[in-house]
Length: 531
Image 1 (cartoon, rainbow, N blue to C red):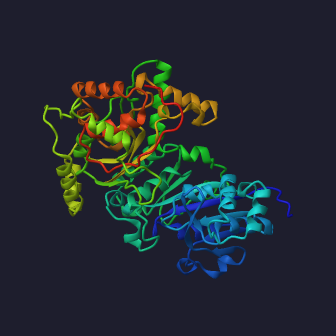
Image 2 (tube, helix red, strand yellow):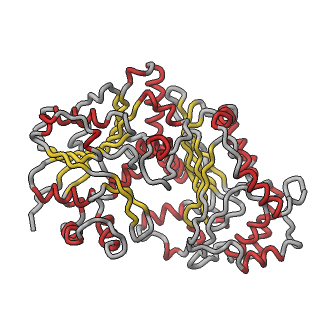
Image 3 (spheres, rainbow, N blue to C red):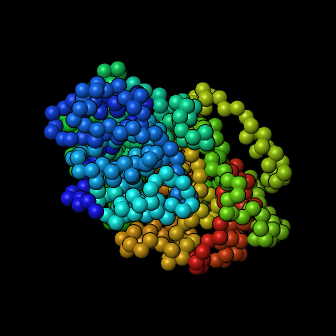
């Protein structure tokens, strides 16, 4: 077995098509850095690099493919695949540095996960079930060395941004598959979401083509990027001319740091630590506004009325909602608990804030069906957003609690004009503590989120944008919370089905009109006696 003295460092280049990744790669190969570099690219035909630059280097061509692992996650990999290619370069002993130019639609976190031992193990577990196009002997060889991280180590994650198209890409409705006609047909990722993903998971962010925009716009973009990723180094340039020491052998990359470097996540964590230390109520940490880019954290321990929240957002964004896939391992949404809850409606008849009974369920479903086929006018939605409390909101992300969804937390993720709403994991208060992570530090953070009889259920969303009117936005969101009267009704339901989260959820489902798509019904395991 070849002896690996030291893992080969790797720089990962991410960014949209046309941002300047290939130009940056060419600059790296031209430079007098003394490294014997292996380059992994996606499409050799698109790599317009002088052959003379490749005399002392190796370029491997890979194409993008999709692999489904045993755990059901779809991971973007380089066909062949990246894992095997990296190991081959390491075992060859011919190179002392590797540069990966990922495809324009790649999410850097998924590429970075390739370097973990867990990924190697998952590929081995999937070998008998999925055709992953790899030699099992190679996989086992990698595993015996301790995973790809023992052979090659991710040194720097670099994202290249086209400054001219940066802001327009935030406000587009385009899907990746529609703009560039690449990727899988079922790929529903959006341009704005991918742009944010690439920024948030970076050590170095290169703002390229800055000569195409004004100084004022440059400063605005730089301020926004720093809000999205406060820990990354931001470099402004043209033709991707950068000092190589900023992107090669920097030692900057740490997976845990990169996974938690997003501005929205840091804002939540900073707020939490500050609150615990102060022992007081939640309050936004004062922010120094740079070029009018500001952020704040909205928090509430009262659930949202689902219909009012839906009405607030439905015509201000292109709302992309989770739809339960056919054949998924979930209930049909109408089990015995649901039937019992509906049979009890005479005792707890749902009423709206004005005391009126809601429309019949059939009428509500018919109306929802009619709305679902309406064509979305992009200009109208953008105008609605601009003239609303969401105004110049650029990014928001966090968790929310719907009055009708008692088990699963809601995940809120918005980039530009597109807002994605989907179910997350169960609230920790629903789960048995035996199901919590083993790490004591993590468990202490989980417990810190508990408050009162509803545990860790809460609304916690970070908003980042230009001149956000925090007072108006807070007021609009507060209006979507259950009123005191509605909250008393909520509490009666909670007491009636004390500790039975399944029956509680079923009753809450019929207590209020809900404009959101159905989420999968799951049975929470463990002890459910927190209420």
